[in-house]
Amino acid sequence: MRVALYPGSFDPITYGHLDVLRRAKRLFDELVVAVVENPRKTSLFSAAERKKLVRSSLREEEICGVRVVTYSGLLVHCAQELGAVAVVRGLRATSDFDYEFQFALTNRDLDGDIESVFLMTAGQYSFLSSSLVKEIARYGGDVSKFVPRCVAKALRSHFSKQGTREAR
Image (cartoon, rainbow, N blue to C red; front, side, top):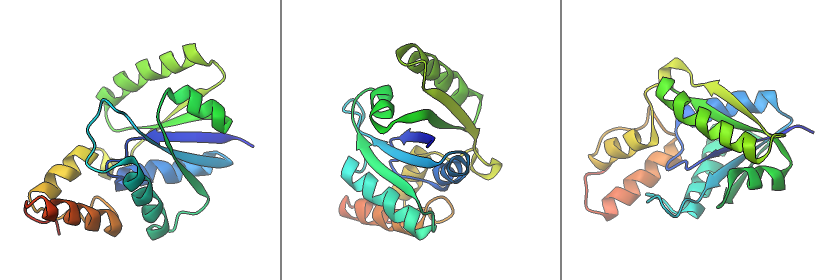
């Protein structure tokens, strides 16, 4: 069985992530989404909340057969533990490629048996990032074109607790 790992912070998951996920799922027997915990990075949602939002988004978008885990540590160790043969990464622009290329070379040095697979995001999502979605939501903008309903709701809830304008 060919298992692939799709890692990310998913803070929050967007339609761009889901686009890459759908296409990666067709290429492998099993796809595992790894919600990465990075202690050096400040996240809007906790790893447990992000994992729940990924699962809820998969249900809402009717994407079945994807396992979701949280992971902290070296990505290649996660891939090894899961028996993954590949790490899937989405690319939006050439700047993404520069970063991901360095990341892929490092992973190859750590474990040459794990391949990096780059998938271009659909054109309609080429500008989309979790940071952009959070910024729009923070100031009360409508994020419904960018994220599933469950994510939009979580963003509204988060920002309403902070006293900022609600996302729609």
